[in-house]
Length: 496
Image (cartoon, rainbow, N blue to C red; front, side, top):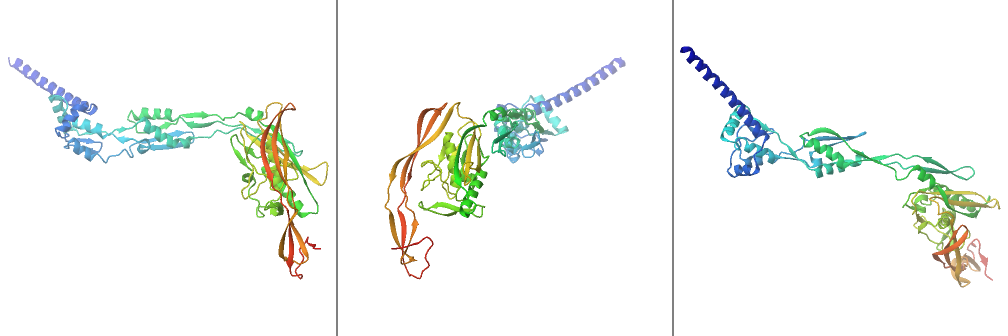
């Protein structure tokens, strides 16, 4: 009988041990349940309304919030930021950029933490709440702070970083030069692909990791290949001669002013030679050649001054280069955006076909309206027909005109402006009995320029280009009224 009682006591004792063990497991389960499952929003709101205190032993990250109501804990956590908690290194090739929480607009999700905290020990059954409280006495509970982020925020951060990953595609190009025979030569160079970040695809990969609770990691930038907009074959097909034009000018071996003009023409031709104009780009003569000053290496030669006389000017003669280029542009039917006539017609082109330039503002500009790069070739050579002259030639290369199509400028004088023979002005700096012609008499003209189109050498039609007014002027003669002892100016003649 004693043996039976002893066995019953053992059984009861064993049952008690099993029961306590089960209770411990239940308590642990309750802690995990509260940690992993925040209470429903409606229940949380009820706890907030009742001013229920968060159980002691609970912290949000490293911040103790035990014993505080939801609102008190919310105030305590209000200064918590995501700074330093997120570090995403975006890597691509030789480029790497680290984004932090501020870069992607991430914020600490204190609302989720507080909902879980206030619900722990308050949202379950009486048994579960009791088990949760017992678990807290054994081991404090730290609820990790998570972060809120959005697709828009991540993409915004990547957009700011994207320029660092951008690699411009290298366009294939033609390098143009003139050989010893003054013939053009093109050397062709291959292009290369570029790349840019695919912001959407890169953001998707980053968000996958962030949503898993990973806040410190490296993400490969997803890159998109950028092809050059031209192929080398395209460049080769579009380096054909569009048009060409030549003018001639006098040279000399003993006239310094003439040789200065020759020098300036050669210098300007060398500068514009091999210039490249990309599609849609506007080219400026003054922009390419730069200011004409003695300090810049230009020499003094005759240039028009005050619209009626010639004076020595640094860079005198460069207008012949701009005029030759202008006529090449007309022959290529290329869009001229800025052009001005001289006040005195040039003797190297028909009236109405000149193009003056001045580094003080008057310019010659044109725009490349074709789909391919355009190239200027300019060179000078002796005139084989006359040793006293040189020839300047300007040719344009690029997208060729349609097969068989050519253009030719045509100008005609539509009116003549007559002036009195002379205007006389008294001048006390000239001795009495002498006179000096300061400005020669010139007729004025009105010239109209048109552009004729031909196909396979046959005339098709004519387009009006512009009308120019060369106003001319009477002679300006200064009559001496000064002392007879004054020096006689060079070129003065006696008054009869």
